[in-house]
Length: 145
Image 1: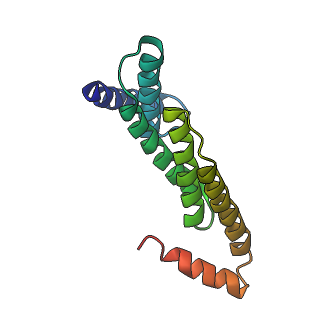
Image 2: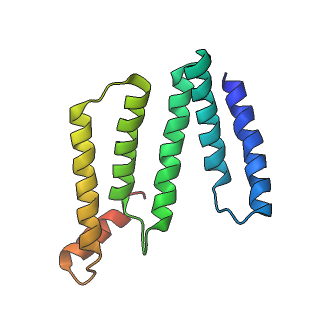
Image 3: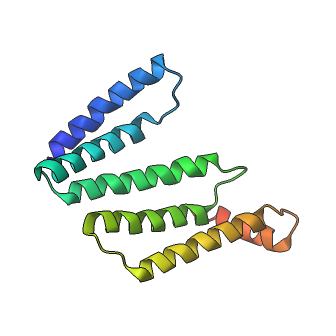
């Protein structure tokens, strides 16, 4: 099944790159390739019972990371690692639910708190003259060093 997934991602990547050269649609060819492969594998699993959830979960994790980077690139003037963290936390809770059917209330609460912190930090950072904003920005800039 992994071979099918890799062949699918590579083949679809070529298709999406070709589509980008002839259409004005702005899509990430790699993200679209992984998403389409994941959906195809999910369809195989749900309709015919072929394959397992492990590979689908791995591809979902890749998609969560892609969403995080795509959203981060759109943030001006700088990425906020707390927003990245909230996307990873929320995405993990969602993928866990999709693959297991279990909702853990504690994980939902923690994800919500992280999201609230990310939104709060974003509001604080928008006031660059504030001392708290400067300290927060300095700390967040060193997050991924």
